[in-house]
Image (cartoon, rainbow, N blue to C red; front, side, top):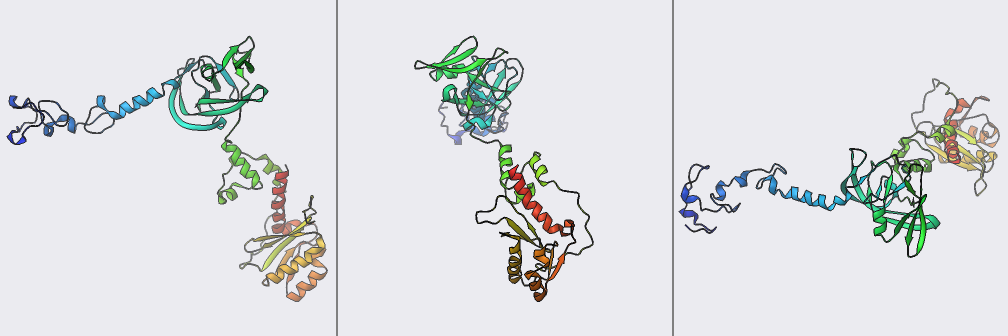
Length: 386
């Protein structure tokens, strides 16, 4: 029979037993695995599964997935670094002559960062640290000289920062260690790079330019921008919320003990009963000279409108305009100020059929809806001032 791979299949009589073959079939060549002694119909490799990837058609020793992983590990073999780990300061960088790469645990220091993988072996411990990225850190050293560190490994669990002498020399610098100081020399220029500490380590004077604000700083920034608003209000705006305690909120929004609610019934339709109060004078005044503001709150919906006033006597005209725009107003709850219970507005209210319901003297708690609206507005201002 011909030894070629191309065999006339019509002349072959396949045995009923798939395990053994007759001697005359030993010269057959499998079209799948290219081995002799069987055909592709009876090929074991065709139906077997790889123990590595679980796919059929190959064994574990020939798995293409394992080979790809091995090649990837070879590319990142430079990330395997052995160093003597000690007690490091997270904000300081140690100049290490034994490290083969720069390492940093502060993500906000990177100006650019790409995903990467690898491991770091600690000499003083049996722990293995994982590399999660590689990027560039920009900063400056003595005399405001800019220095860019390239191929810096991002290691989140690293207790401190390491600067590799090998990487610095590869960038064209000469690192000179003195008794108490370390210098960088390039093109006949010598720059101070660090100092020796009591622990015997050389600490770099490198100051990074933080490119990314930490998440906690961003959350606190939006909290302050929105007048120290609560997390519920920030969620409604689609902004990040804060999880830490805000001392400014406590100092600016603290208030007296609450007075118990009475049996008052709340209105069932909008713009029938209005709560109002005047607050001021406010320093500094606005650009147009207003130094008071008047709040108008609907009892049903708690819709709040704020109107600016130059003088307290302007409240009567503003209330008249408000009632003309909302003719359904039948009752106004306020304090015992003269702008409400005396003068032109009282005459206007009697003619329009509007009932004035002033609270007794020295009982601001009975006008609590308007007082709380003022407190909320002033609390945001006080928080920003603090």
